[in-house]
Length: 614
Image 1 (cartoon, one colour):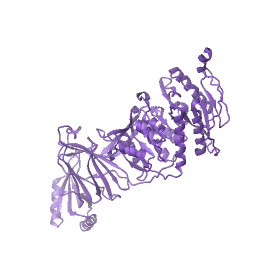
Image 2: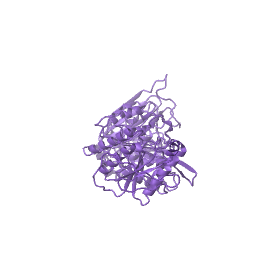
Image 3: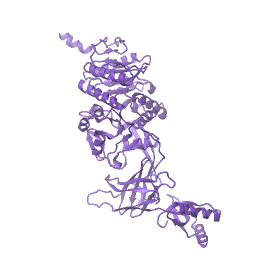
Image 4: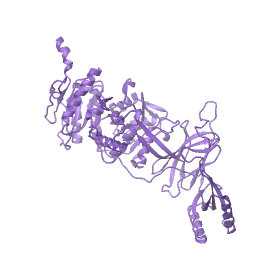
């Protein structure tokens, strides 16, 4: 008996090829010959197999019933046949983990030697089914990741997508399968839901969080029109309660969710939603796929479930979660006169971008979208680019699952309000003087009739002004002290825009605002904001020399035009002296006056907005 106890753990792997009727021989070396397990009585599907390639499910003996359940779902709802590989649990030592993962990789390699597999689903947490141990960089860089279960290849599109259901027990694994089945049944009765993003952890020096910038990146690349996306980030007033509402209520349309994770939960606004709250959510038809641009694959920091794991294991949180290494992700933003004009992403954030683009491009199966995202990631970054975002990406969910395409509409571009008052600097955050009247208006000749506007104090996250701005309005803002602000605006049927501006006592001085709102013992700046009607004027000349402008004004006034000059300063350059005449309260009146001037003077003119005396 002692001999049996000593050598029983040597049995490493059993392979059950139920759907295809095949058996896999021993792994060689330390791996023993496989044993065919006794079939478990669960649901069986008679649905036709419509996909040529097969999926593989890897599990331990106590999760065999759950594996059969997932195999049923694959055939019944996806037309995919699945093979089940049964492996003994690791005992938790590094040697056992390495031996077990090597045996699984060898089995998968044999099954896929003819390219007949589409994906791999692992059932169980990494304690029972360890992550694969493998090396890159000519054997110099060690990795521990599920990525290698898809095969190690120089071409990432040839690596099978691998998903994991991080169940801690057989009951938990079967509960996830039951959740997926319920979702499949509800899918036929749902409308095509829009994409929704919730992101942000309050405001600081960056102003926007990675999920918010990921959202803007998607919008910039045409991945979401106004009917296909809703923004619930911190700039839109998102707080933990808003996130709870979005995840808990049946009537909230959520399909994609982008959030920042921390050890105990998800950040939202200046608070968080705890893992315990996520696990307590009830089922609802609108279960999202959660994208976490920066999370961290080292799960040792979590004393219990990570937020990403909780998304999948919760009865009502979500269908899948993707996250990666915090040091393998980057999102950079470019500003022009304070307006966000371009967002560039790299690392994990870029990979998630490509995943979303592949899905919108028609790859509705999660595994297929992930494979295409990898290929596109390498194509854009180059073959010599850092592969760690792909290796370290954690995918909790079923790669076989297909998701319906949400509504997607195209919409004209919108980059924010145009600053009528020119800032002291063109690039980066716009800077204006204290007590100055700072004016913004909608773009001339734009397609949107109005926008909903919020001005937010970036140091506190509080909205200091909110109103609707029409195409014939000028929005004026003034502060009697220094501060940093964000304008968050959106047309009623168009995309979002963000604009950053600072109010400073010395606008030409570089660096952060000296006086910060919310500091104890200091009063916040007094804010004055409101609308006034747009006035239009006809501009007939722009001169570098004031003398030339004065001569033209004198001539035009002699002809009855009521001309005047406006000085427009360029950052780091001399002034322009713009000659204009008239102040009209409607665009049509300005057009009529401009046309009359061009006919009479045989000279060009253009219509511009004016603010007060300018």
